[in-house]
Length: 223
Figure 1 (cartoon, rainbow, N blue to C red):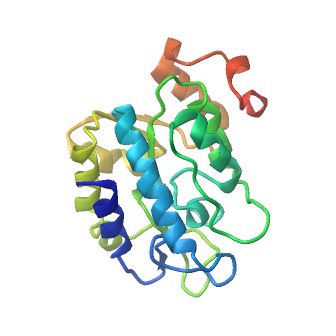
Figure 2: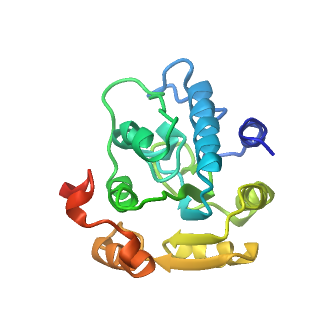
């Protein structure tokens, strides 16, 4: 498996009421070449992760309409795009949408912790697309079991290909699913809906002394 073949396989997936950022174009927000831009972003990101020898995934549930739907990168909003080069050498993603960059609170919390680590994880989701309510694309909903079945083989391929040894689940939705891949699984509270403090404490518990002090992080102001 290569970044190009993996992203091409993702781009082939087409589901009803699911926005696939690697094949679909949002008429409201996207630039004309947005799907191609997001495909390149993900290819380059996976190549950088592979070069780093990253063996840990932080796994969320699915892409949100303010974050990964726009960027094509899990747990990442447009406000975080300029930070990638500092933590994933050789990777500088491009913005795929029109207008000002959009920020997302979950992405801010994720990146505030990531910025305190010497070796960053692969950011990924159980369901790597954006499921939305029927006829309302700017909403978030939980994926259905039949939708998840379309990507399980791809997730398994990703984990095997990159030699992933640990999955840190961001929220309970990912926990049972991650356990099926035969790697170490740990779970922290999702930072949304009042879970910020428990999320930070959970990451501190997992990483302990591996985490740099807050003042050493470029995102210290978020803590």
